[in-house]
Length: 421
Image (cartoon, rainbow, N blue to C red; front, side, top):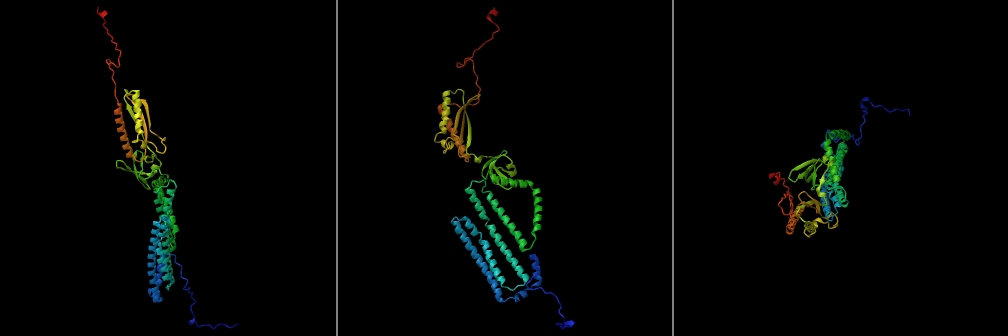
């Protein structure tokens, strides 16, 4: 027990330095530092000498098979998507066809991982390859999410068609673009943090401060943006409708994030900020159920009561005739807003007949104008045949010699026969 180990001579003692295991590589937090470390420690000759020729053949074969299998899978998925689309299975078609590109890259990544896995590599190089595989996998995942955003668009369109909601097809592209932008941003942040080892917390904090500054500097733009959202949800008008706003009357040509473009009937293009339209009053003529016409027909004071009754009856008969009836009588509810004709007033220079009729369809404005022309001509012809005269502003002068209207005439003669005698 008390024996001691023999001491080696001083010149034969081994230095007591600690050697790290070869299987425990140092952790690097960024792809850039890994590349720097790789170029400083790894030599291409060592990589070639550590692997047999069949290892490289397997790697090349895996790359070739991955490219071929990926393209074949993409072609098959596209054909399957078209087949489902022809059967009107739109949702399933988008899910299958959207996987064509990501599926191609996914199969290439799997075979590349298989080929790289059988190579003998230094720990740093192996970590670099692992980061590259992670990058490709992240691209595959977020690429597929980016493609299947179209299913959300399809779902919204079906919901709009099935339910009478204030949403319009104009908001669907905005939702699609917003979701795709969101997926792209999340994918970029994931890749920067988990693949390249960047700290995105400081980025997000900087973006928050920058966003606050931008929002303060662009208050008017934000008002117009939220005004456009309000227009799309509330839907006071849509593209193609005829509206009037603050004296500007025309057809809505486009509804943008900042403004609404209105094409006036003289060809002028008017751009109105959406925030102003939201806070103002808009007249939408395209949403009218009918076009109301108020017509005053004036007859001369020489018209007798019998002729006046005949004049009213002629108008009613015209509006009830087969030529004019269909456009001014509701086929479903004939008692809803029928034409109205009345002898209404004694004007200063005429007898007035007031006419109201409600033309349908309201969207056919030029059809309404053609109908008005035909009605006016038919009324003029009917009154001419009946001997009924239209009145116009006149002034009547009555003379003492008129046998129909005798007027008493008093002459004040200052000189009388008695005075003369």
